[in-house]
Image 1 (cartoon, rainbow, N blue to C red):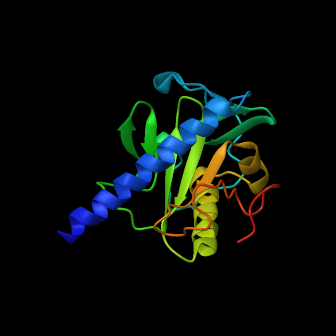
Image 2: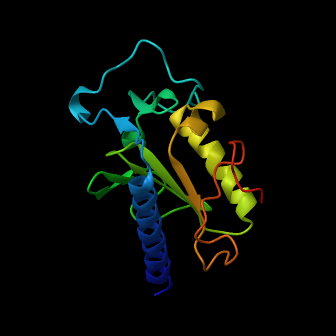
Length: 178
C-alpha cells in the first residue's frame, strides 16, 4: 500500500512538471529544436563539454539548438535509467517507477526542454543534486546548461512558498536564491 502511494505521488509530480513544461514552452516565442530522428542522429566530431564518469558507457551525442547557440550533450533518451512516458516525454531519473533521487528530471524531445522537480526538502540541496546529475549524466557545462530550456519547480506538498515558480538553475542568471 505504501509503495502504491509513493508511485502515485511520483506519477502526480511528473504530470505536474510535464504540464508546467508545456505551459512555459507554449509561452516562449523562440523554442529550441532537437534533431528528432532517433535512428539517424548526427554524431559530431567533438565530445560533450564535461566528460561522463569513466564507468559510464559513452552515450551518443545529440545537439540541441537554442536561441543562445547549439548545445552538444549525451542523448538523454539513452541514459540507462530513462523511461519513455509517451508523446516524446522521457523520465531520466525513474526506472520501473522507482526514483532514488530527491528530484525528478523529464526530457521533452519535441522541443529539447527539461523539467526538474524538487521532490524533497531541503530544496536547495535537491536543486544542487539535480544540477550535478545533469552535468555528470549529460556531460553539459554550467554555461551550456544556462542556454537550455530548463524548468526547475517544486510541488506544493514539498514547499508551499516556492511551488508554481520556475526556480531556475542556481548558477544561471535570473534563478531564485534558496
